[in-house]
Amino acid sequence: MSNSSSIRHFLLLALADTRQLQLLHFCLFLGISLAALLANGLIISAVACGHHLHTPMFFFLLNLALTDLGSICTTVPKAMHNSLWHTNNISYSACAAQLFLVFFFLGTEFSLLTIMCYDRYVSICKPLHYGTLLGSRACAHMAAAAWASAFLNALLHTANTFSLPLCQGNALGQFFCEIPQILKLSCSHSYLRELGLIAVSLYLVFCCFVFIVFSYVQIFRVVLRIPSEQGRHKAFSTCLPHLAVISLFVITATFTHMKPPSISSPTLDMVVSVLYSVVPPATNPLIYSLRNQELKAAVWTLMTRWRMKQ
Image 1 (cartoon, rainbow, N blue to C red):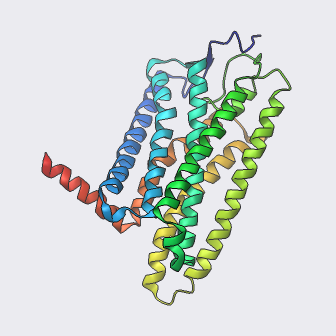
Image 2: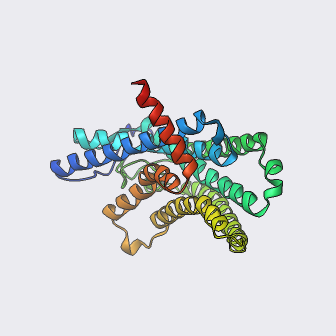
Image 3: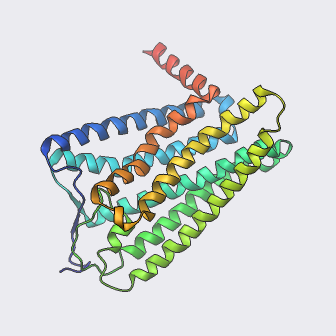
């Protein structure tokens, strides 16, 4: 038995038991992280350098790419280090920092996805008011609010979680530090305070989800009334990637934290956590690029210029 003052490190869940599987996980995570860094880096560069992409939709996409870079750099490097060096230790302070950054980037991403839904709603349902409702200043304020609210929320949860007395050992059932795993080590009813904060956060997430659903109901009602097939195709091409990203994020995160205990297992928990914390940063750029001709053209132009300079 130990308390939080005597804990100097935590033990993360090992990705595999054998050396061959550990090296396989290292190579897999290395490939995913490189793909995420390259794809998101290209989107950020293309939007920043392409003046015709300086629109609200691509401005929020740039912010989303930044959160994806932050997410992939928060969990994957430590998991790769542990697999390569056959260890599962993480220091107390590094665990706190990782928990904060995971909460911060995931919170910012969901806020940005909600704002991007509003952007699509105004663009399709209220096109005449688009310039007024989504001017450059309004977009900057919304993006700043997303980052700032996620920062304060993550700071509050991290400070509250690591103020709890811990006496159930130091082994975490996850390959990165997250709040539910820390709460399992608590030996005090003080953890109810953190559960209350989590309930408030979940309520806010639920409100955003309801807003997204309501917005897309209105969007699809308007799109299906467009007389031309080309107009409907253009509208769907801007909405479906965003809807796909939201679905991947919400379904995997919901299943991870709300699945029945009867089907819970360390392996399943780890696989689903990879799906919502590692896979989206690598797939989001691909999803957005497949159906967006402007973005594909801007990325191709950027790569062509880079090759010409070599």
